[in-house]
Picture 1 (cartoon, rainbow, N blue to C red):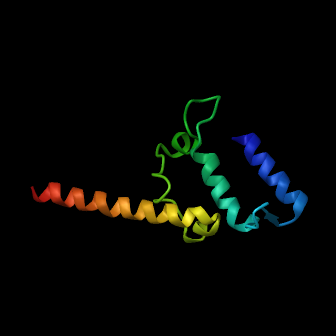
Picture 2: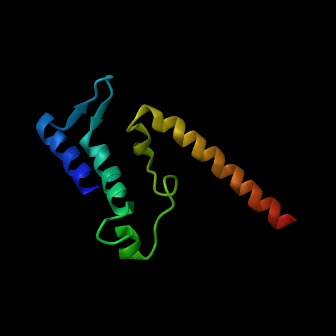
Length: 103
């Protein structure tokens, strides 16, 4: 994970504050840095079989919806459709919980 994070930061330093993909989508460093931090903190590290967020706070956030900021959705075109799926599943699980409480 650290190598991937390092490669992404090096790419931004080499190409300026925006990186254009081969298919035309532009990534901006200011929107990606928070997502990179979240990915780093919630990934398993090789030295400890735990995520750093879990070790620091004794809590690993539910991903991706609970920690997803509204500007994260514009990181990649497919993230918007993924967010719709997560939202639909979250509503379904909420209804199931409510139904089980009523039962």
